[in-house]
Length: 205
Length: 168
View (spheres, chains in turn brown, blue):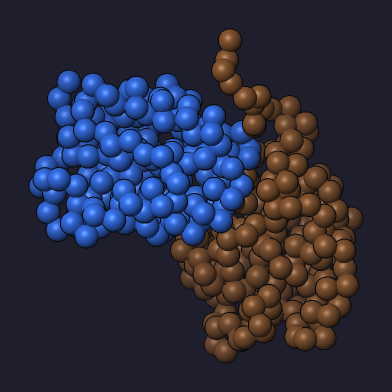
């Protein structure tokens, strides 16, 4: 099972969902399978789940998806109990666990040796946390929680390595700069939610 | 105005500034303020386990139309430096940083932390205002929030015991 196949499997199902992805292969792949205004690429390892939670809490009617990696999640495990306390029903958090720092030289992460992210999440209070053992199951978990509007925390153990990286490097690059992706998403939210996020500059008359 | 009224006036000022989404992690001196924030029905309050999460939460909430603040100690501000740099500053995200100034003049036990706080804020290019007088609470918090929104950057208010009404 690969991350790219998992993402391809859900791309046509997510509609106008806002999708927060960690920089690296995941954002490139997601940008390739569902390009457009509803995508934000995050630079800070460990903040995908926090940014997605902030969005989900402030836009409770909007579906929010988070695409994260094992290295990034391991850097901010403190966010798991926070997520457990809030658990907004419009948030689906997906972590692709390849057991390595894929964008940083393929060195093993702790999950490549001993740590189990879903057990950690459950221990933090996220009872919904589950591994998706197959592509079909992954797609099914995402689609079901979107349909039922239920919080989901889905882990997928995926393959990676030098050959895999060569494949996703052939994909088109994420289409705009990170800063532009944030502004583009905020304007998209303004347009689709009918709210003001970034008002015109002052002074106010 | 007695310093004991500080937390209530700080909360009123935050609400007048339009703040409606707050993340926090306690210091002893912030406990009263955080209790008041948590009990206010007009504010969504998220309790953190580590302060850097709050930078992410405030970023997402801002993108969803909220006006945001994080309440933390200056040790927590140091915990947040990467998130502040590579998310808040990198993406032009405003947020009010309400930082308890441990190691400030008259405090005990945190002098190292106190001594690096203002230089680190300056190093990150984050503008900050030290709040020592009760009659400056309202203008400072409202002004700092407006400055954050207008500059699209985090702005810090350093809270001292003089305005939090705590003694140890």
